[in-house]
Image 1 (cartoon, rainbow, N blue to C red):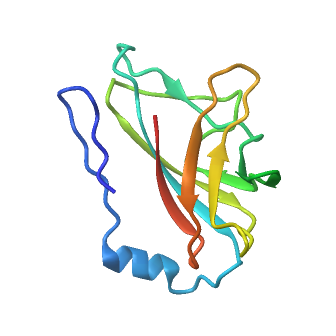
Image 2 (cartoon, rainbow, N blue to C red):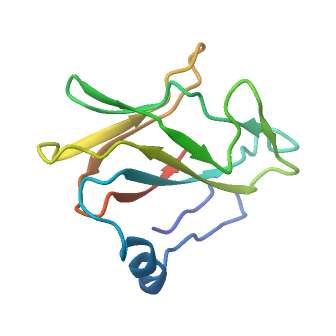
Length: 136
């Protein structure tokens, strides 16, 4: 999915069909849920600010939730990844238990101690368990 920054800088992040095929080749439905995340550091901060992920991040469908099992390439709060400049792309992976078959759509919610967590809604379930999202 193309990812564009609102500033004059723009980025494009795409997973090629070949890479997607290699990633999903050994996936079986219901094994796990892998969420590939794209985050661009904020223009409002000279150095782009920082980013982390709270271990209380989860997937939700109605009143059912699935907890975060593991995060790769991003520190768990309170640790932080500090950007070098505004507009810098940070890609990371979040692993969750398998999304149940009866979930047609779900959301990723980062529950923080403050109000700065993110929500990405209306993610359509697929059979691979591999998803890509952009966090704003």
